[in-house]
Amino acid sequence: MIKDIPEISLQRLPVYLNYLKSLPEGDKYISSGAIAAALGMGEVLVRKDLAYTNSSGRPKVGYVRAQLIAAIEDYLGCNQKKNAVLVGVGGLGSALLAYGGFSKYGIEIVEAFDSDSKKVGTSVAGKPVRADEDLCDGVAGCGAVLAILAVPASSAQAVCDSLVQAGIKGILNFAPVQLKAPESVVVRNIDVAASLAILASLL
Amino acid sequence: MIKDIPEISLQRLPVYLNYLKSLPEGDKYISSGAIAAALGMGEVLVRKDLAYTNSSGRPKVGYVRAQLIAAIEDYLGCNQKKNAVLVGVGGLGSALLAYGGFSKYGIEIVEAFDSDSKKVGTSVAGKPVRADEDLCDGVAGCGAVLAILAVPASSAQAVCDSLVQAGIKGILNFAPVQLKAPESVVVRNIDVAASLAILASLL
Image 1 (cartoon, rainbow over the protein chains, first blue to last red):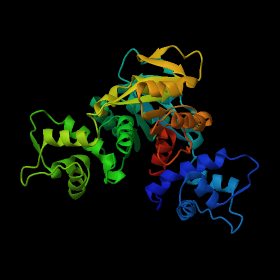
Image 2: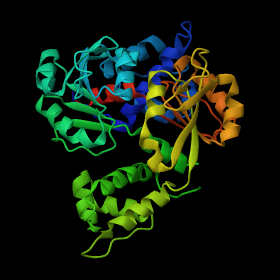
Image 3: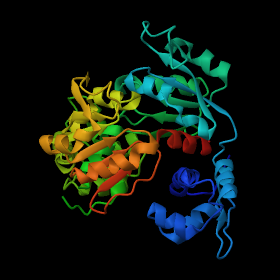
Image 4: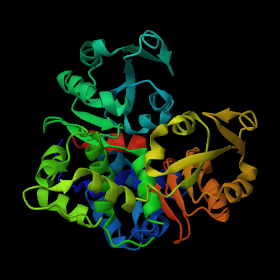
């Protein structure tokens, strides 16, 4: 799926989606101005972002809300089921396994992996926990292309290498370390502590 | 603390910091070129980012690693102790309370709050869990200016309002909803499911 949308615009699409879905059922139409005001953005930016999904509002009426939701969901691939695996069943990993928020994007975490033999063979939030050594088989078996990496920084690169070898194409990395991966693999990082530190720097 | 650094550069400072700290103790010097190569960035960008911390490398030698680490830590305020509170002691909230990664930025989560009376009065990872109603007192008592919001989307705005009223100046919000807060309060969002969906769209 190659898209010409800038990543910064892509990042805002879920924000629009969440907002549009939060409106009362009776709200049939919504204008770009109303969206912009509610989200504290500029109206031109909103229109430009939404145009990437082939949505355009009608003058004086705005967007048909249900159609706009459908267009964003379609653009984000919410209707295409995608399997993900998770590596590192610690506190964060366990919380993510139990989190129900992925399904609205068509994503399901189907299997988890951990290096701790005490965790292997158990299940967390209904998801089986397998040994790290089974990663290749597991990924192949469930056809996952996405992985969440929730291991300590010290083992993150090794797990990343295994994920790449197993055929994973996208990695969401929570370890505070910059991973090396082939260009064909997309890695994005969430560093919670750094995010809070940056926030503190802005005060 | 008002800084003229672009937020995008600020966001990269923890990445440099983690990398510099991960190098062997014996590495006294490091060049901008080596940093750039290791992190997959451009060398000019690296030099520009690091210049905000008043660090500059010497020709042919580079930066003194320990000095560069100190300069970044100083810039990010790692040596100034900052208290934070957390609201929403669910799976994610509990994981964050137990996470040790905040301390390297001088941040400590000192208290947690939850609306569930079964959780109130317990402690999670050594942090006391208090009732949501105690938020104002709690924030005043510990002098926190930072808050982590890990409640469901449906109650996030109400909790945000309470945090603002309690004097919190920076909120890291994990609920998939755009919060309304006064301009004097900095809100940043981490939407894990949306991040994974965006990653999937990039494949």
